[in-house]
Image (cartoon, rainbow, N blue to C red; front, top):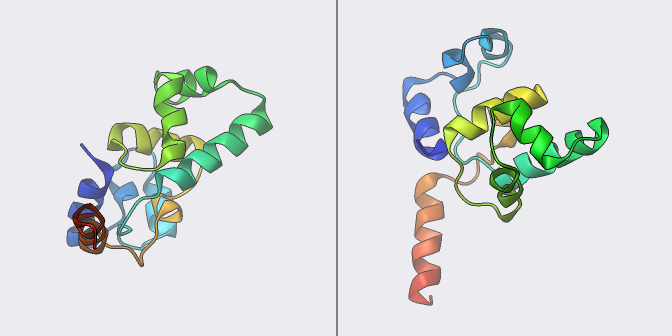
Length: 123
């Protein structure tokens, strides 16, 4: 399931996504902010890359550590775009950060969709 869709659902419920992740309840309690509006896969890539370098790991090693993902799946995050929640959750957990720390609350799903539609229409 795509991350922004999941975030929209938990935002509607008024709770952080971490409250649904086993073992992340402490994060949810310490950060009661509801789900962010748009998740930044570019910001996640930058954080993963910094941590990968600090631990002197290859992308393949990072992928195996956080859930058996191929290196290419993680390196493509540098381009931005959509990310599956099954990749996002363990990646954010490996970094020890909150999901909200990778979001931009000024960009909602609707405004981002309208912007893409305008660009496609040449406006």
